[in-house]
Length: 364
Image 1: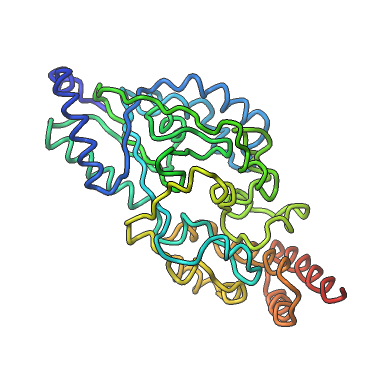
Image 2 (image 1 turned 90 degrees about the vertical axis):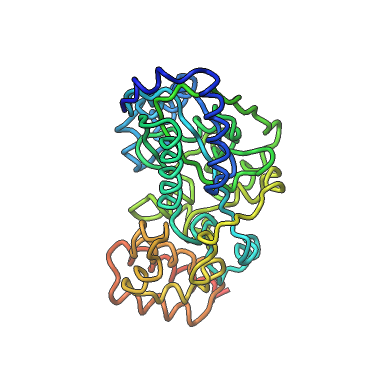
């Protein structure tokens, strides 16, 4: 990142005017809010390292591997002076009510962020366009865009940039927009004026802690990923711990319970992005229909979706657990037994558990 010569020629007034234009361009590109922060994340570094030391990251070994680099942006991208943090709403304006889906054990619940197109590509392209607009205005400058990629402490950056505060569930909350939004960053060598950091407004509320199905929020602002359904269904490659399977209910990809109960989300607004509309009726899918997808169907119907990254085996593993939690039905037992014939060792272990759950219910 080397824009030293150009950077030195920019006056404080020019930089202030540029920051205002960046905000305008960002809104035009579909971001609901931006903020600008420096690179000092020393206040969050100790918390991150303590969290890692306790093993709360589970199998996400890349977090341990990068360690403090996450809280040192100037080391990740040398020359970085400021970080433009952006947020983009994703709550789809259409589709079944999330609570209705959770309350119907024959349906599968997919986290609302994953119903449409993969946000990584969408936001990265928009951040690149933002950088190009800045370049058109001032000439070459140093930058690098990130969207949930590389060791970036995006939530801490968003908080410092004024986009919201990190809530007790570890998601960023905005007092006027709730928490249903994605985050992205543009690292830059421009000494832009800073925006004011956000204040925490969680107060004494602990609705997210109380609602968590697996008690993964082990203390305010501390989530043990090893207990978190989002981690278990997406990141975790091995067997789902037996003691957590019933608590998973019908959640087959991610979990939104802590957001659904957060009082600040009464201010959340549906996204205007067509790309985030539900695809393949995944806002309220029948579990048995999804369970019937072979790998080719899975790959075809999850093309361009965040769902694809977990792979077909985890997809079937998660659905089999949900079927074990569903009311006893002969057709569910039949589907589980049929899948056993060709299942991997990992999947067989979950199928046996689900069959046992189904058969025990039939006896009652």
